[in-house]
Image 1: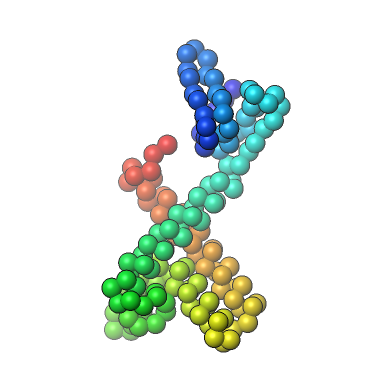
Image 2 (image 1 turned 180 degrees about the vertical axis):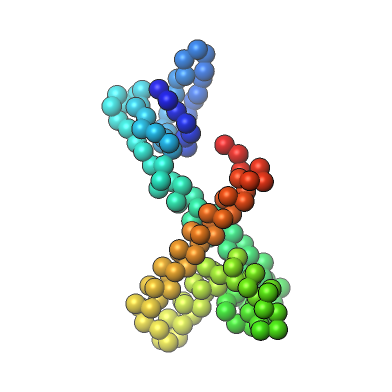
Length: 151
């Protein structure tokens, strides 16, 4: 049985000439036949990688937005002191990292204030999700290249 990588819950792995697997696991790279359940197979590689990248992007963005908003006791958003013309390069860097949470905060604030409708709120949340996914892919690649993320 070829096995490239897995996420395991309650698992046991022993390699004594022949690999033995027990517990619950999800194959990341290939279809894998479960020894306990006969022909039962799972392939979640693409979905798990996308979910991991999205979660990583939201985590990075949330940590950055919280770190920015904590000293001034204001939620991060596309307004002063986070975005200013005088500090354009710093504003772009802040927006690139904390942007998904900033967009989410501003969209929800505008929706609660009846400035935008449900359709525009959905579009803003979709853009924030795509932005978080892209940020997560970049953060995961950076962590992989620097050796912080190992398999």
